[in-house]
Length: 268
Image 1: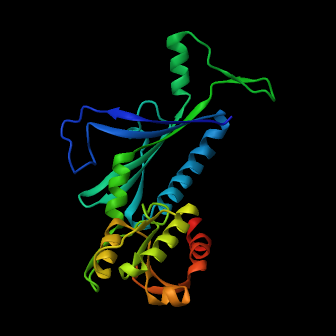
Image 2 (image 1 turned 180 degrees about the horizontal axis):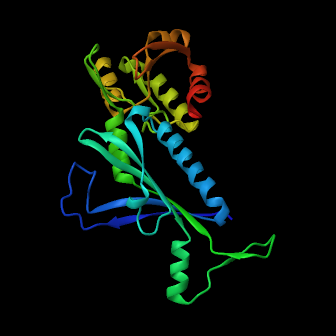
Image 3 (image 1 turned 90 degrees about the vertical axis):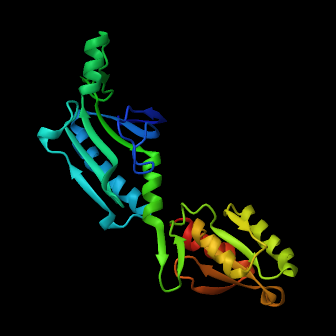
C-alpha cells in the first residue's frame, strides 16, 4: 500500500439536455485513478492528490483565476463519500466541473465483501494486521478537459490583430515550424527539420505561402516556435527564431537550435 490503478475508457450517461458544445455529452472518455490505502493514510493522500491536480492544471496552462475548488458540504456528499472536492473551470457559459476527487473510505470494498461473501481484507506484511483498504478516486472527462484547455489558451492579440493558441510547450502539437523564406533555401530547411525530428522534437516544414501567412497559420494551431531560413542562414549559419506568444525574434546559430530548445523548454 498504496496500490494505484489507472483506468481509461468510454462512459455513457443518459443526459436529458446535452449542450455547451462538448461540455455535456452522452458519450465521453473518462480517466480515473483508484488509489487503495491504509485507513490512516487516506486523509493525507486526499490532500496530496488535490495538490497534484493543482500542479497538473498549472502545467496545462490554466491561470489561477480560471480555476476554483468546490469542497462539498457534509449534507451534499454522495452516499459513498467521506469527502469530495470538485475543480471547476470558468467556461464562457459559467463555472463547470472539470475534475472531481473523492475520499470513498472503505465503502466500495465493504459493500463488495458484504454482497459477494468474499473477504477483501488486506494483510499488512509488517504487522500482520488485517484491514479493508480505503479508496481515493480522482476522475475527469477527457473531452471536457480538452474543451477547457482550448478555451483557456485561445487568445486574441488586439495590438497585432491576430489569434493564437497559447498552448504550453508540452501540449503544442508542433514545437517548431521550419519556414524557408524562398524556395532556394528549402534544402537547408529540410536539413534543419530532419535534425529536429531526429532529436525527438516535433516539427513541421512549411515551404509555401507568404511568411506572414505562415506565421499566422502556425500561431492559430499553437506551434511554439517558428524558425525562418534566409540568406544569412546559408552564408553565416544563422536562423531567426520567432516566439509564438510575443512574436519576439531571436537569432541563433543553426547548431545551437536543438540545445536552446531542450535546455529551456523540453522539461518545462
